[in-house]
Length: 202
Figure (cartoon, helix red, strand yellow):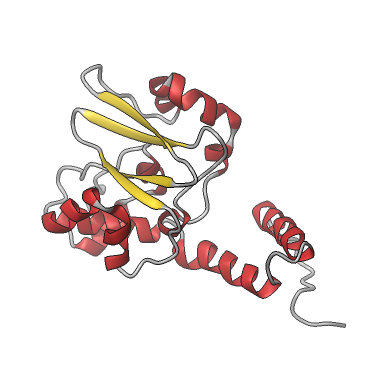
């Protein structure tokens, strides 16, 4: 009986999918299974969207950092010790009059290093094809209703350039610490299909 990999508990679907991709890559000799395990663990456990949330909270609390982030996203996230971005990272800012959302029409390019694993819907054909054509309708389905005075900009990710949305800081969060702010930031807000909600008043 070998130890370690033979776990009697069935794995959840995403894990199974990751395993399938993993065995394919290992089989083709493209990557060692240890390397894959390390990567999967990194993205599932240690990254999640938490890194991106830290970036957003820092930008909200530090105007100079925000300016650097919007100018050179890659350099700015590296300042926070975030490694692993292999492509250019462009950060686009939501304002009261401009709402940004990110899509990858060709496949599912996604800024893993800051947002972790992409949500299933991001990879779906429906989202990829409709986000560009009817972004307001798609946002409405996510529960985000934007006024006619708000311009919607859709950014199409590619192998060279990944996008991340800097959401608007919600009103009423002036007293929150950077850490408390980061806890409010969701993955969907950084893709641009949601807004960051102010915390419920305790």
